[in-house]
Image 1 (tube, one colour):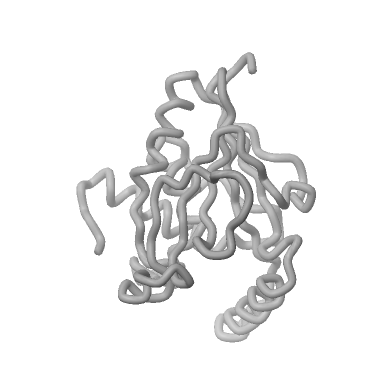
Image 2: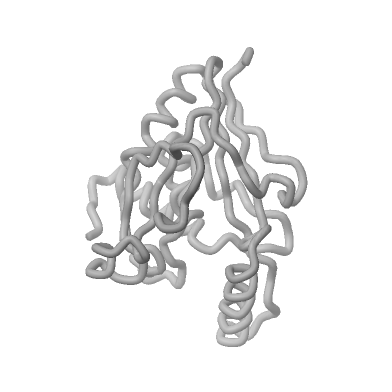
Amino acid sequence: MADAHALLWWLPVGAGGHVVVHTSRWWELWNAVRARRAPEPLFHAVLEVFTGQHRHVIEMGPAWGQRGPVRQVVATGPVGAQALGRWVMFRYEVRCWAEGDIPDREFAVGPPRRISLTVREAADLVARTAEVPTHVWGQDIFGVGDMWNSNSLISWLLQSSGIDARALAPPAPGRAPGWRSGILAAMETERGVRYL
């Protein structure tokens, strides 16, 4: 691998599955009705980072039901409520997987967004993955109508690495729930504010 860079992939939420694709569609329909707008496609972000020597896949997903090779989990957090996190069914994991796979890459909408990085920036970004706040998945921690989820991990990581995540948007006319929460969490981290 000759150069360092990152690829931001946008995958339709629930791509390749059966349950999540329907539950997310119902969730978006409910939110659209409440906001008096038309429902929009939902997207899930995955980051692929090339350090010049290695490739890492960074994502967040359920801790349960995972099979196959070691996924290099660097952090875990609760889903729904802090107290529920003691059970694996209510935990998520943050993965920074060297030479890892993106199982649903075939469903990606359009080519990935390429982000230029130096070798040091790419290595720092990979190392920072383990420092992500492990807020409760599904909680609106900032009271802005945006919940903490897998998209929050990616936007937090980009924003805290000096990349303006506000300028990166999913394919129109789609939405990436959680993206704003990650940006706000990165800004609060810079100010030294901690949210429990």
